[in-house]
Length: 205
Image: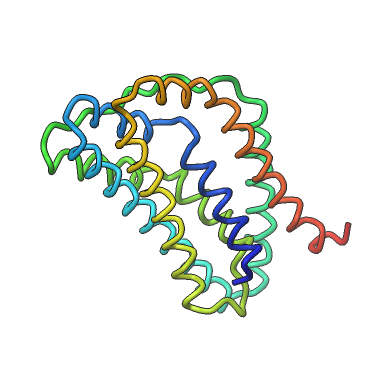
């Protein structure tokens, strides 16, 4: 995997993780009400859920690629269109509503709510399939596929662990919330850019 492609992927994953939503609300509330330990458990479990989806997406794309190259090409184009649509929605959307996630109080509650918030969100699976289809090719090595999945896991985990560590400082969280729409729009611009990068060689623009 080229360094430039990996850096592009990392950029999208970082902005995606930073975008306000139910996951951020869950981590913040679990930390604020149950303590740093519970918040870290929630963050790590959430990252594991994201990592599972990322790995399943890369392996699933490999199966499709080997069984039907034409179908993979169609998936790639559809994925690019979907990313462009998501990017447009992110750029034009208003401020995100404040989420109201379930708050955990025990270790198991923290782990289960963190993991299931990610793993039971079908939107994450669709986004990963669309996003990774732009980076996976027939020449992509198994190590590169694992790197992509591990990158998604680490970006998500490190971001939410950082949120846990600063959540006690309300000013930091308030600033993050105040810039939530800007982060969302930056995320949208990156998604549209990736979609265009695929459209150029596919459609010969």
